[in-house]
Structure formats: structure tokens, C-alpha cells
Image (cartoon, rainbow, N blue to C red; front, side, top):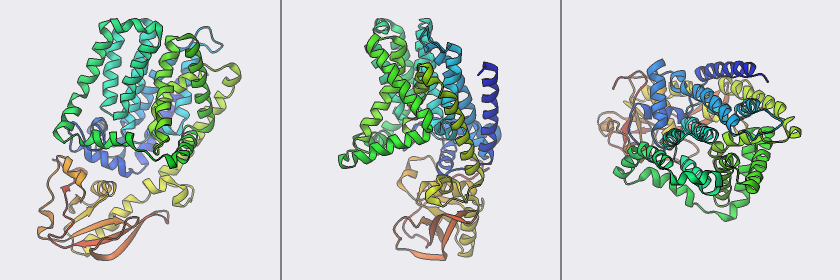
Length: 489
């Protein structure tokens, strides 16, 4: 595909993603990160703060709309694709049958054809800034290999630090680059130069506020996320491994997954034979993370989005394949983009009447606006002065969607780690309405009228909830009052 046609396709895809981001309902996690953006701090229980900064920037430009919250997701995908294309050109082996410039185009197309990138480009999660800064680090390191200019160490360190401020799994960037320096003979001389150490210092300096917040809060975030690394259920290893491989084949789309895995195998073999710096960098940032997740699957489940960080390098690796393999590239990205388009239609409008077990978009996105309206009506019917929820996603959705005259409170220890108003006074004079999913055990509380409601999309149930009446001063006590859309602090 000519470069001009590829750029036109990318800009068209970005426009489509902006449209989908504007009309698709917010997921509970996105509403939760919007709450973060209204209570900015150097760290949170679940992740570092970068996603909150991304949301805050978008809403500062477009207001607290779904597009405002997600604005930087399509833009990050656009920028990441351009950086990846340059990195693929820089890391392309010469001579090869595929020209270096075309290799950049093919790598960008393959990455954008994955459902992982397609979904990430229209939703705002910690993976959004993580993948942008991960790819930017890969770009800086590829430029370093191509030019030999030491200033790219500072850029790589800065981008890696920003990635670490997005998600703790960016530690794999530092480990990967360190492994590359030790294993790739042509790169080893850098260990005797100050530039890599200066880059490392820049990255760690950017991460210091996150460490400071953790230190002030008993290291809760690092312990919460780090504890997953120590999980061990060997009896379930075969099932976890099958879920990981099958899930990634689906999320990357089958042909893209095949090309990426074959490409990583070819590049890894090339590095094993030649210790080439270009191949070594792709192995360090593609194969090495993949091996880490495979090892984790021997003892615990790997969430589907975790391995997304290996796919930028894997897309570059796919351009190292022989012409016979390259013939699959067009069908691969064509199929992937078509599947992403169908996923966008389902997420934005629920055009296919699928039941909840077969439709993750229904479970995560369906019916929240009507649900919030029904909960507010039940609160008024019962004379409740506020709405409360134990589940953080339910609480965040209600905070974003419910009428402003009904305060929304979170009931969970996690809210104690936010700089949000204390909710202890809410239940002093008026009862509250507690919303709890029926997937959880019933609570020993008085039911409200109506006692149950169902969240649904186009009449297809997504989830059922119980409603309880919290008498004044009744347990469980609300922890924090959540911000409201359009409400000034």
C-alpha cells in the first residue's frame, strides 16, 4: 500500500474512532477513571495516575462528555501508529524483499487490525497511555540503533518513565532494555557510557511521585499489583495457558496473531544466531514480555489486556517474515479491521441481539443511562437522600449519570485512598438507597421498593440488582462522596 493511501486510511480510522468514542456508553472502569480525574493525586490503589491525567486533559478540552473522557485514546493510537511505523523502518533488516518504508506501513496496519488496539483506541483505560509510551520508548530505542545518537537514551528513559506512571507492567520495558544491553554484543559498549544511565535516571525521576504516594499509603498499590506475580495455582495451569493463547489469538485476530508469533520466532532465531542489535531489541520488547506472561499463566490467569504490550514489537517482527508469509498480511489486516468495525457497531448500538454470555459489550456498556434513571426514581420513591454502591464501577457510573440532587457515595475501603469528601454525615438525617448486584450474596438489610431492578439494552438483560434501604446511621456506612458531572469542586 502506498504511504499516502496508508496515511489516509489511518486518518479515516482515527475519525471513525472519535465518532465511536463519542456515542459509545462509558464502561464502569472508564467512569471510575473519570472519578480519578476529579481527584488528582500521585497514585491510586489500582494503578499509577497517568490515565487520570489523560481524562483530565480530554475533559478540559471537550467537557465531561464521553468524547471528552476518551479524547486522547484515538489520538494516542494515531501517534503510536506513526511512531511504530518509523521504528519498523529503523529496525528492518537490510537487504530484505520488503522495503523498509513498506515495513513501517505493514507494521502499523497489523497493529491497528488487532481488536486490542481497536478497543483501546475508543476506550480510556491505563493501557491507553501505557501503549503510547511503550511504543514511544520502542521508537526512541529504534532511532538509537539506527543513528547511534546518545540523546535518544534520554528520550527512551523519559518515555519509559511515563509508561511506568501509566501501569506497573511497564517495568518490563526497563528489564527488556537492560537485557538487550547485556545480550546484544553490538550494544554492550553503551554500558560504559553515561547516556543509558542518565536515561534510567530520567525514567526513575518521573516515577518518584508514584513511589512517594505509595510510601505514604503503606505501599498499598504496589502490594496489590505485585501480589498478582506471586499467585500460584499449578493445578489450573493447563486451563490458564489455553485461555491465554486462545484469548490472544482472538483479541489480536487469528491471522495477525499467526503473523506476529511467526515473526517473533524468526527474529528470535536471528538474534540467537547473530546477536544482532536490531533483532535483539525486538526480542527484548516482544518475545521477553510474551515469555513473562506465559510463565505467569503456569500459576494464575492472565487478563486479556496484559499482553498487549508485546504486540508493537511483534508487529515489527512480522515484517521480517519471508515473502510467502507476507502474502497473508493483506488478508490479516483486512479481516482484523472488519472485525473491529463489527465490534464498534455492537458496542455503540447493540445491533446484534446477543445474550449477555455471548456479548461482553452488553455486560460492560449496556443500559447504564436507563439504569441510573431507574435507581434515582427508586431513591425518590423511598425518600432516600443519597445513593450508595459497594462495587466501584456501579458507584462511578451512578456518579456520572445520576441526577445532581442525589449524592452518590462509595461503600468500600478503596475510597479511603482518594482525596474525596467524607460521606459519614450522609446517613445522619435521611436513609440511603444501596444498589448491589445479584451476583453477590444478599445483604442483611431492609429491601427497598422496588426490591430489584434489571439493567438491559434493547430488552436484553445485562445484569440484575437488589435495592436496599439504608436507615440513618446503619451499616455499611458510606466511605466517600463521589464527584458529579459538571459539578465544580
